[in-house]
Amino acid sequence: MSRADPAGQARAHAPEPIHRPTLALVLALGVAAALSAALVGLPRERAHLPAIARYAMEISLPRWHITEPVSELVYGTRGFDTFGETFLLLAAVVSVTTLTRRREPRQSRGGEERAGEREQAEVDPAGGAATPAEVRARTAEREEHDGDGEEDADSDSDGDGDGPDRRENPDAVGLGVPGPEDAEAMSVVVRTAARAAAPILGVIGVYLVAWGYTPGGGFPAGAVLVGVVLLVYAGFGYRRVAPFVRPGRLEAVELAGALAIIAIGVGGLVLEGSFSANFLPLAAQPDTILSGGVIQAFSASELFEVSTGLALAIFALLAMEHDWSPDEEAE
Image 1 (cartoon, rainbow, N blue to C red):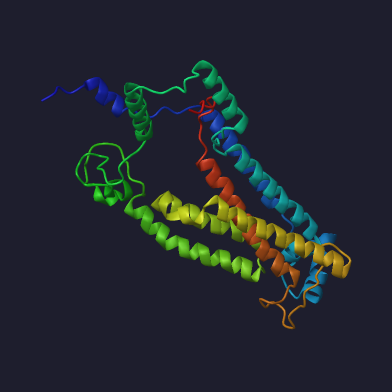
Image 2: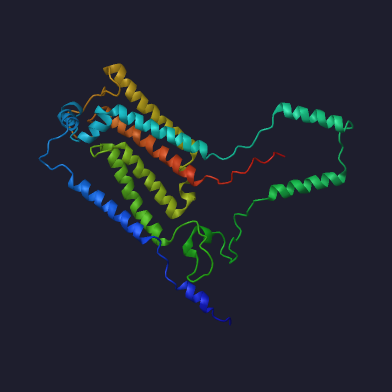
């Protein structure tokens, strides 16, 4: 039986040090003061509306058949600004995916191969017939190189005889088992909460984009749906979301959403003489899923562009390799 380490026990039970409490207090009070000033400065119900808000309320119902002036501003009166914001997001996604892209293997060129063959012929005119010992050495080296980094999918990685289930499911590990957590999924509490919250968030995202009568429409709906994917990823691991976050599929959907937004804007310019003007027929009954004209189409296109763009950027950052060493020479 090993002797107890009083110094180690004292360190384990020592309180965590508090760093710069005065600075933290000053920052917290500053944020509280700023929020209080903003709250006090909010306009009251009898305050005069700004001109743009008054204009939005005057045209949202008769022209767009919707009673939500914020959505009318975002996708109607100031639709060109939303168009620019969308393609700023697209540019940011392209930049992130470009910077986080893994190195591509250098392909040999025909000229290099021919130059190598000429150099080999000059060094060994006889054709370079290898001896049996050289053939065996090259074969062993090739097999050793091919075997590096390979793992048996059915091997017991933790050595306790429970197979690969331990890495996939933390519930397979007994209580009090020493060692670090090596499961790919979270605990049963987190996974249960993810199962309960994901359907609710999915319905909220679909509702936001389908009706669009709450401020935002496709923009917040796309963010909500990406949140669902991240929730599943955090609770169950990458394997569960891998079929849905493949770059090729997401890039195709994002491109389709961007092209739809361009078509909506150009359609208004060609048919109505103004970029992003309403050229679709409006429903007779306001506040229905068919009313709003191009606002609904714009909002739905935003859903696809924003959700796939955010997913591409987030998972590109998660998968980014931090090895910036020089490229290895090809064999």
